[in-house]
Length: 283
Image 1 (cartoon, rainbow, N blue to C red):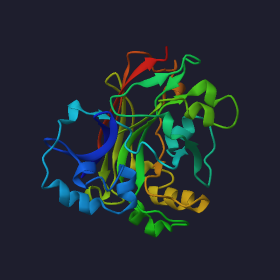
Image 2: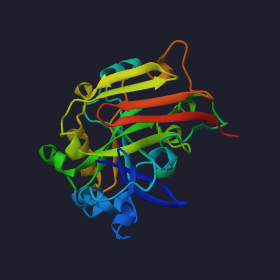
Image 3: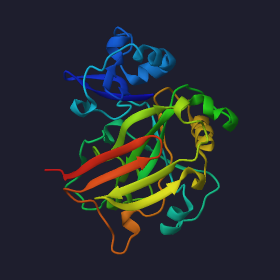
Image 4: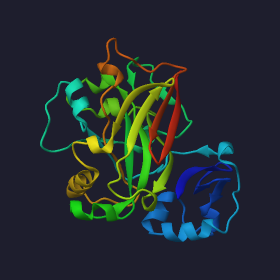
């Protein structure tokens, strides 16, 4: 099942994407859940799937203004330097433990929403990634149990303001500019993608392939990432783990390739879909 967050009559809502459009689950549940995050917290995905089969779409998908898949995550953990090719192109050393940084919720942008290059920089770079959304919370989750905590998967573009990332050894400023992190178009539930399935990740800029890799190439597996960050703090339903970008980022090309106003950037994840964002410059 594909689950999405969006605006309905100007108000945040959520629903299931079907072949004919979108079934609004907030209405189907009679207002019981205020958001997709609340649905996950109640462990009601199976119940939602049963409801969808008896409902008609309220609107075609193309007529809906989508929101980031989880507009209000408590935590967005982003794994850096998690593909060998990316470690090599950044001229960094491979570390025994995964490298993580945090994003904030309002740094995100939805499918078809513009990624915004701030006027303070011209160095807006793409980073296609696979996002894992947590469905069941927990602390110190063993790797062998990680699959039980995954609600599903989405596409992510961890777009980065490179010069601000390099201001200090802390990456946070370059990773948290407003509306730079594309997250969408929807969540594909874990029952559709068995845990450990090898998925292909592709990033395109104006139709040209810039990055391509598979999850078999991850240095630290998704299970390892879940175990690691849940040791730091309890994971909660709706938390997001962004699992790393492969080689080919714009900053490491000769000459560098920065995203410009009018560009179209796409992140495609096999069996999930395509996240598409135009690029604009902040006025």
